[in-house]
Structures are given as structure tokens and as C-alpha cells.
Length: 252
Image (cartoon, rainbow, N blue to C red; front, top):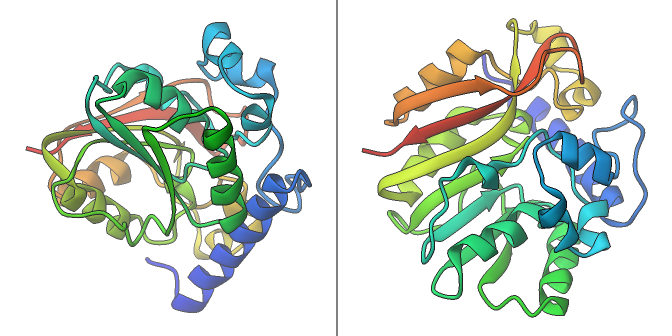
């Protein structure tokens, strides 16, 4: 059952508070919020290469958080338009920009003004002309219909209170043949109403997660085909009730 409007807004406020603090360099402990600064060791475990990390400013790495490397799925091609939902400090946007080249473009979308500002500053310092960061919510994508070749996201969709709206928006924005390359947390069991209404657990990328069956059903319900979920690591690293996975799908 969907969250009430008041519960959804409560969770969004908590998310903005936590990610705003991360952008400002003030990480909130997981028992109090959802974000902690990334380390190179953590990012290496999550699928980023030494070469990739070596090409990024330290400020980008410090603001990174996620559960995988969606740019490493081989679904981004030169000359394409790619969107990163919940782009944060911009790590996946910057890596995707190298794959699309100067003929392509990567748009990072984030609901936290502090993150958008920081990521924009980092892109300017790096002289990346094929990158843009926009302020917005993933439930209301500021994108034209059929304008995007690929959509990536890294441990963000599990935080959305309205995933059906997110999936329908992605389907609308993608071109025919457009692809999803998502790293996300997936639930091993459905969470109770009481668990889902806890903003701290939701914000910690736990109780907002949906099961593999729910993920597949929701994506197919939005119109996607060739949906697959591939587990990345055993459950229990973050919480015994969830596991990290890559999710892929195609718009017919």
C-alpha cells in the first residue's frame, strides 16, 4: 500500500536534510540518517575501478554514496543522451560523460540544492562541457517525452515514496529502444506499514526497498520489457532484509 501524502513528505524532508548535510561535509550517522562519505575502498568494492576513481576529483568521491556502479553495465554508448536519477555529487555523471563523449550529453537530476550546486561546481572545474545538473524530483522528471537514450541510477529509487510514478516517468522520457541501468537495494521480504513509516530506516536505504518480484512487476506495468534483476552481493552488508542488485530493462 502506498504511503500517505504526509508520510511521503516527511521522508522527502529527511532525505533532503541528510543529503544536504553530506554535500556540506557533515555526514549523519546511519542510525540518525541515510548518508556517509564514501571511501575509495568502499567504491572499489562496489564495482568502480582504480582507473575510474583516479580520474575523479576527491570532492566528487567524498560526496558519493550508492550500492554499485551503473556506468559499468555496458549500456552507455558514445553520442547518447544519458540521465542519472539522484545524481548526488556526480560520480556516475562524470564517468558516463567519458563514455558518451563530446557528441553526447549526461544530465544529473537531484532534489537537493546543495548537491546540485556542488556537482555543478565540480563539473565546471573539470571543464566538462557535456554535463548538466538539474534540480528536480525523480517522481516528476523535467525531461521531454522520448528524449533520452539511457537512464542510470545508484541506490536512489529505493528511497522514492512513489516508485510507480518514477517508472512511468522513465518510460515516458526514454526513446524507443532506450535502456535502464540501475543499481539499487532490493528487499528480501515486504516491509510492514510500521516499518515503512519509519523515516530513518527508509532513509537508510532499507524499508523503502521493494522485493525482486515487485520490482519486475512494476517495471513491466510501466511498459518495460527484458526486465532482469542481478544480485551483486549477499544480503546483510547493509541490512539482512535487503540486497544490492543491478536492474536492467528496455523500452520497446
